[in-house]
Amino acid sequence: MGVALLALGGTISVPGGTRGARLGGAEITAAVPGLAELGVPLDVRDVQAVPSGSLTFAQVLDVVAIASRGVAEGADGVVVTQGTDTLEETAFLVDLVWPYDAPFVLTGAMRQPAMAGADGPANVLAAVRVAAAREARGAGALVVLNDEVHAARWVRKTHSTSPATFASPSTGPLGHVVEGRVRMLLAAPRHEPLSHELDRERLEAARVALHVATLDDDGAQLEGLETTHEGLVVAGFGVGHVPGVLAPRLGVLAERMPVVLTSRTGSGSVLRHSYHAPGSETDLRRRGLIDGGLLDPYKARVLLRLLLADGAGRDDIAVAFARRG
Image (cartoon, rainbow, N blue to C red; front, side, top):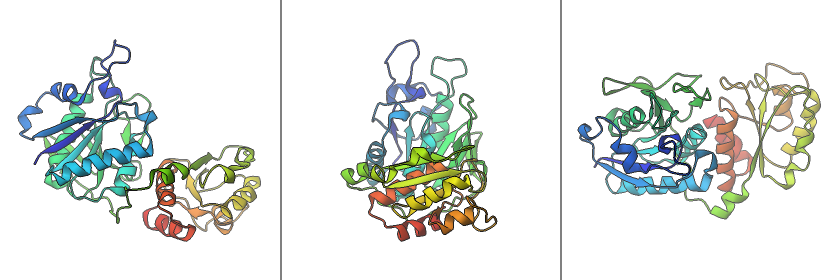
């Protein structure tokens, strides 16, 4: 019983003033006031000591495998400490494959431990509370910072330096930690988990590109993409539009690989049939692009790569995005 706490790298582990040094999980937890008094046994392990910007899909899936063993051995929940740069992506990857009711909580820090107002200790304390809470069971992967509980499905890093950077623009947080109590207000939809036991060579080969539509974009950088990648996510303007000149090029790519249409705005859904001009969402869907729904470009890329690595064809991918997007 208790919580398995897996420590990666990131700001929460950077002591400051010592180049290349890193705090381990035991040092991170020892600096958290009130943690010992919670009465929650912790199994602390150090894993993948790298900045989150250098994490790979394979490494994140390795963390999931370690966490799975912890749950099989009796852990009530899991906490992972990591850098915040890719936290919204790693959390969604975990959420797609996590098959247990035990909460999988990811947390980190925006200020190094030696800085005034360091937020790491408070975030770890809140994360352990959530991981051990009966109220959080069945919620999948959660991101807990600033005493807020966010669904991996919705959370985004919205500011480069603010401790309140993590938000869920489309829904708001699922819950809060108030006076040490976990208060869950909403429930995120859950789906049948995807496999986390993927062939690593297949995962490596399932490369997915991300193209962000911009003013006067002719798509020249997409030339030859079908020879280097197996899929593409397009971050379109607004409700899912691109310059008209770009539409035919995307249509050709959609004949050769799955191309998923999302919005670069950061919240809200792409539309399906409200506009009809060249480059509109209707035009792009007619050319074979897959509707990404409410998924932002970064999370759509995570889902598409996992599906490709698992051998899904275009029709299966379209169904998966219709269900999860």
